[in-house]
Length: 69
Image (cartoon, rainbow, N blue to C red; front, side):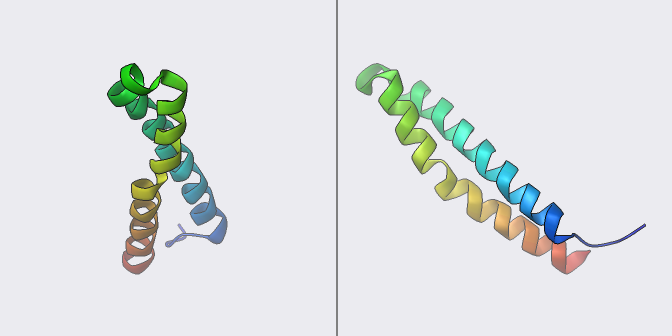
């Protein structure tokens, strides 16, 4: 069994993590501000700002995985 993470696996994790952060940001944007701003604008803003927290978390997780594996 090969230990570690490949470049393709890291890239896939980064893409999937970014997509997940965008989806979660859009959903929480609608839940929090949909009534005040309208659902479309709240989803757009949430999808835009969601990756600000999600992508660094994925990158830190990949660095930790690369160090310990």
